[in-house]
Image: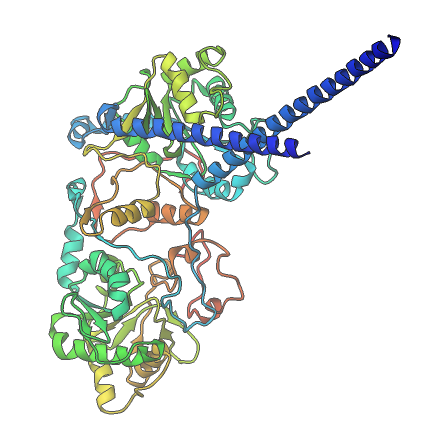
Length: 318
Length: 322
């Protein structure tokens, strides 16, 4: 009895030490990757106002109508309060938005992915969207329900980008050799990228359903690996001044962190004026953002936007 | 001879059994070792995933059951060090046309005074100063004690909720004695209030500051013409300010009350200052006593909450309440 319990204990100790080692190693690798991130990733910039003003008024109208964005939101039943908020707020500004859920939820309509695994959900959602809508939409935006997105700013960002080119953008992070777009900031794929992705989904050597041996690799990294085989590379989206437009944090968190990290300095500004996404919002905060972005305005300030993106006819869009 | 052979066989058998026992024992040991390592691994990974997992960061806002309660230092949230200059990247705004707003800034002069205290200067008032207060034509921070560095005016009172009315009286008196001719309208706000000055100017541009009138979120109980909620902030015309300060010199109004907004409202009625209608052109309220979430989300404030009985005007039930 004693020898058994001692060997049991030895086993427990060995197991935990092994696990701790692996976690540390994993962190060290990512940490190392982040340090290089400043210098080596690809940047993509928003258009310059001067360039846009050069285009004629009619062409601009045509241009603003040519963007059709299909929004994929991956949800799970536990996200139901965020799901409700997202459903009532920013997703109304997508040309079409559909919710892909791990299982059927009675309260809201969704497309059942019948799996709990995020990467499998993502694959199935992309396949579904591509098969069904490849002719109707030219840009595909994927987000989690913790994200708030301003679709008009997304369209503005994509303005001079050709969807028949393989674009894969958002907030990009470098992890070792791999540059990937973080799912928390939202992922944008052009129709060409969707095409290439879908051609690889059936090939398990390139695009396995279960990547990673011991730890599960996050779904955004798996997507990047898959896309890399198809020659599609991640790019970090920035405005004309180099500020990130896809954000993995909320405004409040940005400000809090900036102030905590530099208590003695006056921090210069927070985020881009043409930001596309913020993440980490609560359902209530979604409603406040919606009000702040689309309704509240300071009297007497007129923003001469070069373009207007109108909602589709008959949409429930405020 | 057969005895020893028999003994030998027996010994062999015993040895065999012993051996088997040992083998099974070590097999068992091995099994338990494996089990143990598996469990240790799992436990450890769980621990790590909890430690590295995200922590929810929301502090729910407190609804006061008492309409005259104020947000004193309740939450005890860690206050933000440092400051932010939101206008640093103003090149993003270079196409913005602010002529109308600039015009109103010159035409409708507003002096803002912010009710604060020594403990809140660094916690709250500092952030008011960095943000909306910059859009006032003139801003003053009123505290019980003077602070030359901030700068804050010392009203020479004590701190505390029961002192609010007395502080308000002294603050308005100070403003009257030093800045009467520097503005047309005099706005009182707390250090946890956010004021959109451009919209306030738009509201006030339609009125004459020589008229005795004041604006805010109008509440109906206790005062016939209604009174303005303290939390939502209120703004007095120049004439209203003159009459208010005069009312204390001539004892028309009482000095002591523990309910600042109600007492001010009663005084306004006595000195014939009109309680104005601050609603926008579609009838929605523009002054809000709570944070946006409370007002934007349908059903956030329960129907039995005192708020619904206090509002002077009926709510406009459209998509949003603002």
